[in-house]
Amino acid sequence: MIIDKNSDKFKEECGVFGIFSERELDISTLAFHALSTLQHRGQESCGIALSDGNHLQSCKGMGLVSEVFNKKEFNNLQGKAAIGHVRYSTSGRSNLQNAQPLLAKLQEREIAIAHNGHLTNSLFYKNELLKKGVKFKTTSDSEVFLKMLEQEAGKTFEESIITVMKKLKGGYAVVILFNDRLIGIRDPEGIRPLCLGKLDNNYIFCSESCTLDSLGAELIRDVAPGEVVAITEEGWSSVSYGDNVRCATCAFEYIYFARQDSVIDGVNVYSSRVLAGQELFKEHPVKADIVIGVPDSGLAAAIGYSKASGIDYEMGFAKNNYIGRTFIQPSKKIRERDISLKLNVIKKNVQGKRVVVVDDSIVRGNTSKKIVALLKKAGAAQVHFRVASPVIKKPCYLGIDTKYKKELIGSSKSISEIRDYIGADSLGYLSIDSFLKALQGKREACLKCFGF
Image (cartoon, rainbow, N blue to C red):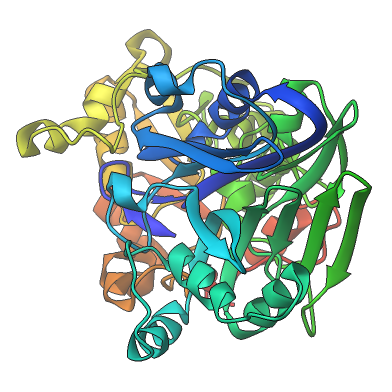
């Protein structure tokens, strides 16, 4: 994960998609719809690689799916299998060279890879490969994975993949395309989501189940942590490569990253956010006139807070959906006023009222401070800030550089100090226990950024 300094949120890295069929498919349409449903996971670049059964080809570009897929080379693409990718950069610069899928050769066979996540020890293996004279075309850790596979000559594809995966560390979901098979892989802790679905006789991998819904496909199951699933014309098979596997999905999949209509490892994302809001009221009740949510991922928790408290839920903000893309960076002066461009207070609903405002998280605190100021400027009598996640105390060990710890307001300030900084009349965070309760029976999640 990395910090988006414009929105003051963690950014997801990427979203992946794959499909395999016995017959030719309209890859252009399928990939466009699939990647559009994953657009929230990455907005810098997107692309697809497809197989006609004999050869692979790749098309990719910088920008949103709707922009890139308007180009001529994306029209009327046909094939029996494909993988797709939307990207935010965590490892490697944001440019077309690092856009995925990446193509290479393995044992004289073409291979394409699309990867979501971060390989924490990839630099070590890259340096080892550089000493052997291996050349790299990108700065992406995904290429390190490909080059490591190339070193495993003499083994089957699955054996090569398992050998490499046992060496690499991190949180990741990977889809790999050969001319005759599609492979999906998930890290041994299940940090990054990946699910398996079926559309007629076509098998699908995707980062979130909302993609399956949009295509009219059925969810078979989530790919298990430490599992390699291979799809061929004979169907699908799987093998586990991880030791001490556990399903510790990143907590922020439920808090912020995933779309609300997705189901991640058996947890309905929307329901978990509503339940988080209900638990938030139990822990931090307050007398108020209305409850509002910060669009978009704070809305479900605000509904939950309203249900539990009996305080009326109202719309507090009108959101401008056309502001805030990180691919196009506005001037510094405009960025400084970014929050007021994105959100406008509905004054009639807040004027003279005691307002509970619910957001999904606080990272640096700058946006929360601006939100409180906007509400008070619009005439709110009181602003009580409620956060539907625990306090973020540590950088993510799977991607955020430790230098960013000083940017996490929860790492250095107490709750009362944060309250004073953002200017709220009161402040309350969800506890770890209540967060886990909101996951509807799921036993584990990765909580390291909360200090656990």
